[in-house]
Image (cartoon, rainbow over all chains, first blue to last red; front, top):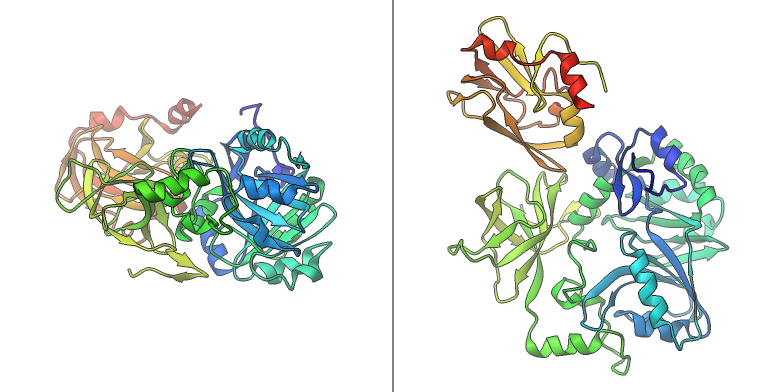
Length: 368
Length: 127
C-alpha cells in the first residue's frame, strides 16, 4: 500500500462496501465494489452514487471575479447571470491547448465555485494564480469539501429527501442549475448521461449522507463505472480526449467556445482564430467496433485500403455495457470522413463512425 | 482471497487444470486472475481440434480493464470449449472454478500435469 496516497473522507465507507481500491491521480479511490458492469447498469436503470471528492473545488470571489473568469475561460461565464447556474468550459493556454476542462457554478458576478480534475489541480491552481495578477479577485482551494455525484433516473427522487439542507430548493432545479447554502452546493449536473445531482458538502458530513443514500437503495459506484458511463455519454476525459497540445476545436469541444461578445479576449482566443483560418487538423468522432474485442486507448485507425498510414487514434476506448460491444472516442484526421478499420492487438478490424452520445437517458442513441 | 479448490493443479500464469479422470483436463482461470481482470466482457476460445502446446497462448480474455492471454497448462488436442462463455462471459467472474471453465484438452503427457503446482504453492507465489 502506498503511504503517500490521499484518502477522501469516505475511505472507511468504501472499505465497508467492499471497494477494490486503486491509486488514481495521487488518491486511493474505489475502482468498483464487486462489478463495475453491474454498477454501470444501476446508474442507467436506477441510481448510483460516486465519491468524486478527489476532484478539486476552488472558489473565485471578489469584485472582479467575473472579468477574471471571462479572461481565463473559453466559455463565457457572463452567460451564468445572477442565479445559481453551472457552465462547462475549457481553460486554455496561449496556444489554444486545453489546460483543463472544468465546471463553474456561479452565484452572481462576484461569487463562483469551480471544480477541476484531480490530476491537474496543482497545475490549474498555479496557472490561475499567475493569471489573477491585476484582478481584484480572491482564489481559495476548498480541500475541506467532499463531492458526491448521485446519478440515474431515480437519483433525484431518492437523494433529495436525504439532504439535510437545500432539499426543498434543489427539488426545483432545472438541468445545469445549482443552489448553495453555507458550504453546501447542490447542482443538477453530472458525468454519466443520466439525470442526477452533484453535491459539494463539508467533508466531515459526507459519510452520513453516503450511508443514508446506500440505505435508500442507491448503488455505490466506482471510477470504473464512471468511465464507461461517461464514454457512452460521449463526454471527454482530460488527459485522454483533451490535452494541452490540442484545441477545443479539434477535441469535440467547439460548442464550449463562446465567440461572442467579440471583444472578450479570453486566453487562447487568438490561437483558435488563427486555427480557423489555417485549418483545424483533427476532429473528434465516435467509433463502434463491428465485431468482438475491445478498443483501448492509443489504438490506431485506418481507412479502407491503406493500412500503412494511420488516419486517427483512439483517445478513449472501452467496452460499452449498454451496447455490449466496444466503443471509443477518437481523434480523426479532419480531411477524412470515416475510418474503416482499427488495429486491435495487431489485427485490423472493421469499425463504424457514429455521432456521440452512444447512450443518453438510458436509451441507445446510435444505430446498432 | 478465497480458498483454492484442492482437486486440481495450477500454473503460475493463473490457469487451473482439473483431471476429469477420463484422459481429459479442464482448464480455467483462478479466482485471483478474475479478480485482477475485473468484469470479463469477451473471450476468444481456441477452435476444437486445435493442437496446443504446454505454455502456449491459446485463448484471450478481455475484461473492462485489459486483455489477457490464456496459456494452455498442458499439451494436447482441444476437445471442447465452454459454450456458455460466448453469451455470458460474466460466469468467469461469478464461478471461475465451475461454470466458468474455458476448454477441455486431451491429456497426452501426464508428466506435464504433474509438473503443475498444487494450490498452496500457487498461493505462496502470489505474495
